[in-house]
Image 1 (cartoon, rainbow, N blue to C red):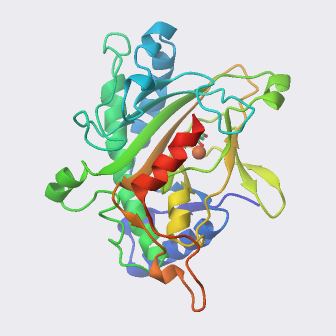
Image 2: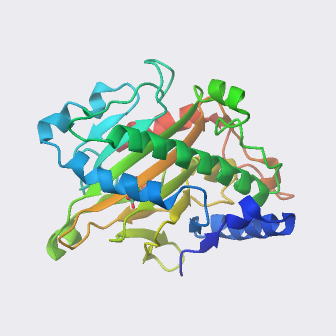
Length: 321
Ligand SMILES: O=C(O)CCC(=O)C(=O)O
Ligand SMILES: [Fe+2]
């Protein structure tokens, strides 16, 4: 099995039939394997590269400077997490280190919403500006992607707009305070072949939120579990593309029509660090996640009781650290 690659440029510039064609391709990919790559999107390649090129200098900071930005200082999980902080596949401790940001909001703006922590500009020049610019661009892309996902489910195109805090700029300014979106940069230190057997860059897991958009460098290492054959399939790095995957929330919302698929990263056996940046769309905290009517065929029943995005996230984030 291969991870499908979908050129979405037709959604932005194409005719109605082209949009529908993309929606059908997305539908198939979201059902299985629940992972795909997109090309022809709206985030400038230059911005992606600029972000990837500023990450090494952040992670190369002395440990005490990174520790000063630790996520435990933050009520909303923003900041630095060291190697081993997360254990997604026990007994392996994840070998990645990470740095999480979100919308820049006042303290106590609600669950997983609040201020970011940043290193001094003098220590990592351009880091804050570049990451902030990137976050806005990938957030915009995720809004478009949710519109495509709505079409793929035969829903009205703006079905998920409130969930992803979209709308006209004025509504957006208000909504931005309500919806949760986070972006985490990762560094995966290299492993020896023996160590790669015994450790994980990131242990096998499914993503908690609705949709993840991942930017990766060219080293590779991300693997997706193919349930029918019980094989791990490598996601080939494609320059400028995003790896997109369905998270648990969207799986629940679609009554498991769309699949939240297990994945992991095997640390690179190389001389180089691997870098990636994951954008998580967790959405409107108060959103009721309840079987979407178009996902229920005649005779089928909802598999899960209704919940809210916040309840769902609290139960998932609680057990991974
Ligand atoms: O770095 C990667 O390739 C994957 C990261 C990931 O799965 C995650 O952050 O949830
Ligand atoms: Fe993940």
